[in-house]
Every structure is written in structure tokens, then in C-alpha cells.
Length: 322
Image (cartoon, rainbow, N blue to C red):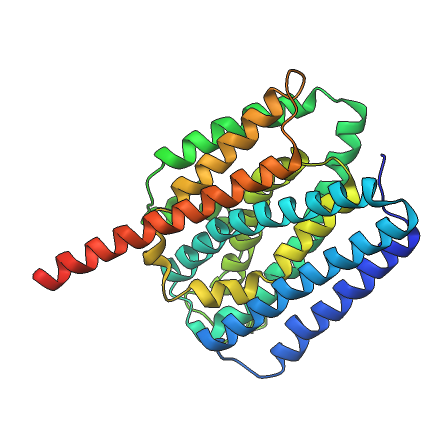
């Protein structure tokens, strides 16, 4: 696997991730069982975005001093594009978490524990998936076309899909887990397991955690191939992916109270996936520059938000008339 990652870059990235995890997951966790306020979530989201951009700046500086601007510029741009794609697609993942917490009636004060383990699990699973994907692509280049076709199909399916949380409890996976775990009928505070009459029982909170992890795996199947459309370098794919994931918990609490205000977002994300899928499918005939990809993805997101704001304004006006 060809990569710009050197031992110094990998080591520096590992140190940054450990420090960020310590701050985001452990120091925040010491505050006890409570939901992060929207103000705190906005502040932490800004912190994670800023640190990600600072890392990219340091990454660019290192490459420019060791290998020159000809290498540094496109690699730093690839990181930024991958980060933006992953951050955008992560929003849809957050909406699924909201749906799960709502369906299983998980109080806001207990969601923190699930998200802490959910983010840790996502980091481990995505790291494995990214290295496996990088190796497969290095051995079988034609897989990029498979990924492209899959993203094209997924983008169209996302645009046509209807939101429905009523049937979560009837999903085969949920029924299988419930049938194979001795489970309590109600949530037992923050605990995933409780002991009753000498027997160990799982709680519904464990079921929610399992579903959160499964949802991330499902979304990773979309987002990781999307970044491979930008670059196949495992260092850039992994760093851009994990930096986006590290801010997911803050993003969740930021969007938790206003999720219904982003009804048009899935259509914008579907267009992004379709664009990336097409980009991968035509790579042998025409290579779309990374700068163009970044501009297209950013432009789609901005246009989606503007349309969303117009739709919200129109809906608010209708409610006011009523």
C-alpha cells in the first residue's frame, strides 16, 4: 500500500487521537449522567473542527518541507475533501441515532454513555475496515468500480427512501438479539448488564449500543468507499475519517433538538454519493481533480442548506397562518 504516512506522521496522529479521546470521552464523562447542552455541543464541535484543520495544516507543512509543495498541496487537499465528505455523511448517521434513542425511549441523560462506547467502537471498526479496504484496492484495482456502482445505487436509494422508525423493533436483527439475550423489560440507569436472582441480564441500553455500532458499520460501508474516490492513501483515508468521527458525540447533541429542521439534507447527501459514484466509474476515462471534487461537495452542501432554510421558512409561515 503506497502512502505518504511516515513513522513520524503516524506517531503524531496517534498522539493527537489519544489526547482528543482523553478530552472528549473521559474528561467529559466525569461530569456524570447528563446531556450536553446545545451551547456546549456547539463549542466542542468548533474545537474538533479547528483541531482537524490544524492537523491538516501541520500535515501540509511537514510534506512541503520534506517532499515539496507538489506533493503537499494535493495531499492536504485530499484530507480536507475526505474530511468534508465524512463529516457530511456522518450527519445522516446522527439522525439514525436520534431515531434509535427515540424508539427505545432512552432519556437524554443516559445517551452519553451509549455514545461514548459508540464512538470508541466506531474508531476500532473503521480502522480495521480502512486498512482492509486499502489492501483490497491495492490488490484488486477493479474494486473501485464496484465501490462506484454501489455508491451510485446508494445515493439513489437514499433519495427515494422514506423515514420510518415505527418498525425498528420488528427488524430481524433486533428480534434475533432479543431472542438470544436474557434482557430486562426496562432500562436500568446507565448499566448495560444487571444481576437479578443470581442471573445476569442485559438491559435495553445494551441493545441500543449494539444497534448504534451496527448503524455505524452500515454507514461506514458508504463513507469509506466515498473517501477512496478521493484518495487510496490509507493514512489520509484513516486520518480524515477518524477526525470526523471524534466530533460525532458533540455533533449529536448539537443536532438533537433541531433534527426536524434538516429535512432536505438527505437529498443533498444522496447527490454527493451519486457524484462520487460517477467519479469512480469514469476514472479511467476522465480524472476529476481533487479541487473540483471539494468544490462540488462543498457547493452541494451549501445549496442544500439554503434550500433547507427556504423550506423551513415556508413551513414556519404556514404554521403562523394556521
